[in-house]
Image (cartoon, rainbow, N blue to C red; front, side):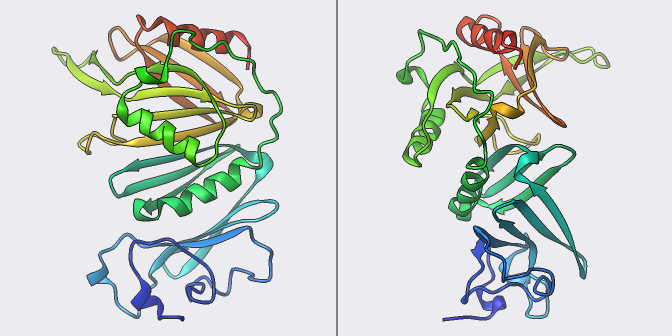
Length: 287
């Protein structure tokens, strides 16, 4: 039974159907005759009590079809369309901290950043799965995993992420693990040093993609520490891996996974030989 957009409004992502139609602002711009694989709307980040029936209550309408991803964005009283064909998608990232979520789609010349409330995390995961299904599997690497790593070595926060990934039907091999840790930050402009926390990172892969699971570091300073982050990089988009001493932290190595138009960074302790060896081998492949 259809209810009004105002009555249905809340933090939820709704897939477009008879009960949850296109927002009025977007309706003239989205052709519902197209065979979308997925079509959903993302609400404005406002409290329910501040919403009124005369407001435009949705900021984005997102579609995945046979050709790629389309995002219609609200710009005051106008709508802007961004399109990204699957052939130009170089990875996808889901970041979640409590109720705050961000989906980032990496493209050749730009990134699509879609904020969402994690009460609808399953909707965004299904969207990410649709994007990942477009990967061809070309250029898959034969990796040398850390032979001493066991699932029982992994901290519970990352282990739960890995378990959830497996339950969603993703196949993967376990490659390397860097636990959450602290390092001293050196600041050329200040006479003192301070500790900063690095996220724990779990490296996985399958025939189509390199997968990173991360937790423990906030996206912005001052945020709640506990977070969960999933990044998928198709092998065909990985343009190289570098590993070097961090310019900003003592006793830390910085890994850069280069994509067309972007780079994904992770950190590792030099004494973590299993992960260092994995990253060095990945870099040596000239991926």
